[in-house]
Amino acid sequence: MDEVKYPVLTEKSIRLLERNQYTFNVDSQSNKTKIKNWIEHFFDVKVIAMNSYRLPEKGGKRGSMIVHPIRCKRMIITLRTGNSIPLFSEQ
Picture 1: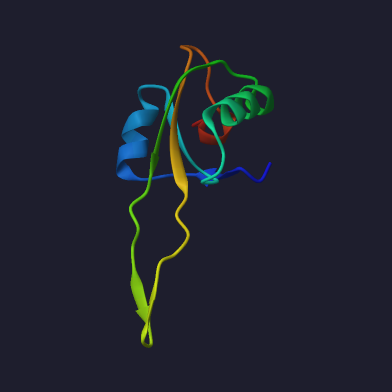
Picture 2 (picture 1 turned 180 degrees about the horizontal axis):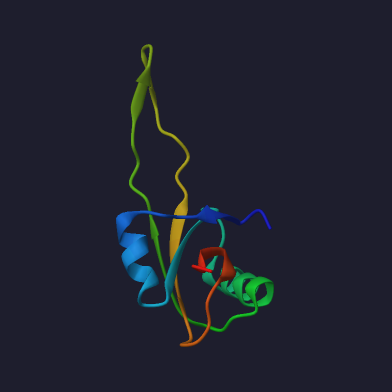
């Protein structure tokens, strides 16, 4: 699926792992329903909550042109207790 780009590993996302919350960058056009269904079917887990936000734009200059890179959306996905995504397992 092209809508889920990759998992995010930052200080905040590592702290959220302790609360059974996982962070992914997703396509900016995707919606919560699509992402929830995909996560539940692909990883065989139960999603109980999802939060999403857009990352801030970071402009840059290339010569005399101002460039704005394509932004993506970030999803924080909360799983039911006892479920985990094997991608982040410590085993």
